[in-house]
Image 1 (tube, rainbow, N blue to C red):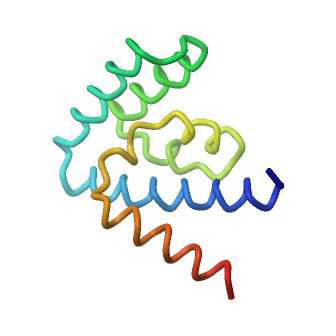
Image 2: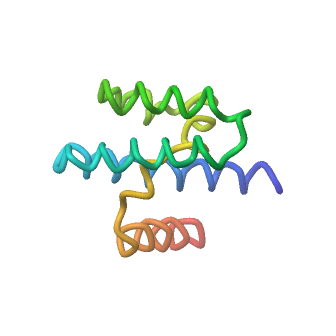
Length: 106
């Protein structure tokens, strides 16, 4: 995969997370769903990503959305192990993906 593709994926992930954080701000109870997802992942996903899942627990509990949306290599790495996008309705996810594809084709 080219670096350009990585940049596009990172941008898409960031946009999805921005929307997920807006949703969490509007509906704080959704945080419990994200936390439950992390617990489920702990039972079924590689232990190598456990430090990232633990960091997500802290981010969600403390509502540290700045860290979740950080535009850095650390932010990109965190978002790769994030439960937040699972909260988004499918229509929202698809709209973000479509809008980014449209922008990149111009």
